[in-house]
Amino acid sequence: MTTIPGRFIEAHIIQAIPFANLNRDDTNAVKTVTWGGKERTRVSSQCWKRAMRLYLQTSLGQEAALRTRRLPEYLARHLEEHHGWPADLAERAGRHIVVASSVGGEAPKKKTDGEETGGTGEHWSTAAMVYIPSSAVPELAELAIQYREALENAKEPKDPAKFGRKDSVIPTGKVDEILRRRNGVINLFGRMLAQVDDAEVDGAVQVAHAFTTHATTTEIDYFSAVDDVTDIWGDTTGSAHMGQAEHSAGVLYRYIVLDLNDLHANLGGDLEATRELAAGLLKAALLSLPRAKKNSTAPHTIPHLAHLTVRTDRPVSYAGAFEKPVRADRHGGHSEPSVAALNEYAAAVQKLLGTSGCRYAAHATLSQEKIDALGERVESFDKLIEGALAGALDGREAA
Image (cartoon, rainbow, N blue to C red; front, side, top):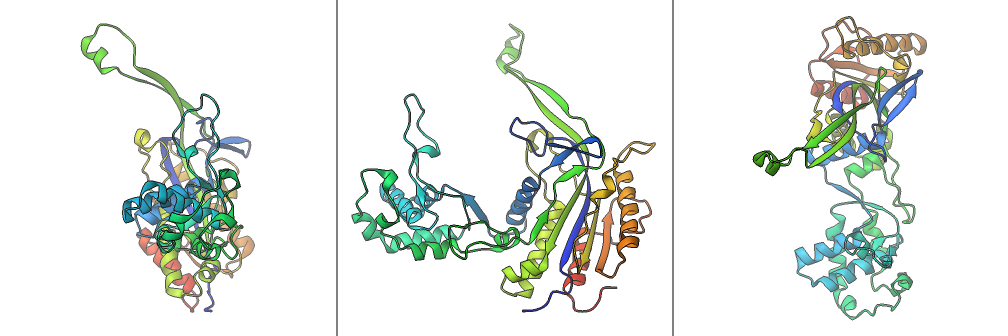
């Protein structure tokens, strides 16, 4: 297998986010973290990883990966819509396939008195969430077609809860073989599927929780919805609906690490596939954005600064640059002070660690300020990514 000269590509990103709530907790409140004695707005790593995954799939053409427990239902619908199967037989196929798998299936829960019907509770599910390429669903459908006669003649147990692997007419090995399939997204972000042998994939991407470089406060947005008929008639006052929602605004520090060795191993040593997926991941890291409340806030900014490094030894986060929250400069704004703090911290790290483990460092930015510790300035994100990949994958030492 080809040796990767530069193992870690790191992205350090400064990005201003206007009034928004990119990532909510279970009470719909803005997620926060207290650091350096001050409360900051936070966006979880899980949230931004999903945004990156969706960007890879929708904008860069990577095959979708499905995270779901509704595989039996999804497979049944595929058999109905694409192969003309009757609904009852399609549902039976979905049930038999998941029960046959090493993941196993779960029967619908019995409804209590007064419980509403409908929704996912009426369908079988997998016993654990599966993570598969979207192409695995047509493959599972083809497997069902091979065993259609057996499915048509299969007898269902009277108690669904006792329907186990021994009752399925589908071979476990054939189902598990399809569940082991992986695609580019899974090779990047990894997969936890302990129930199926050799199905786990070590993720090659590390994503830190994003946080504001400065102290923030949460603001309550009170809103009301006008009743159009009342507005036309003018016969009474009041609105059709009132509510409130939490939002905040600030400048985020974001940090992402791509382990090229792990990605290369996941791809079976395919260097060109490694380069292609790495480029896609870096572009997704720079341009993706979580979608929460996008219709009411449209917070579609781009990074104010992106700094890419390639390291041979270990990743180095620059989060410590903001343990002491930055202050707005005399003209207002936190973006430029954040860039200055990052530049100053990077210079200190270079003095402390030296530069022997760093093969490449460069930045692209909207800032007009002098930046001397973040490598050369390049004119675009595309040039920045190209340079990082050359520094990481080319055999020669980066300049």
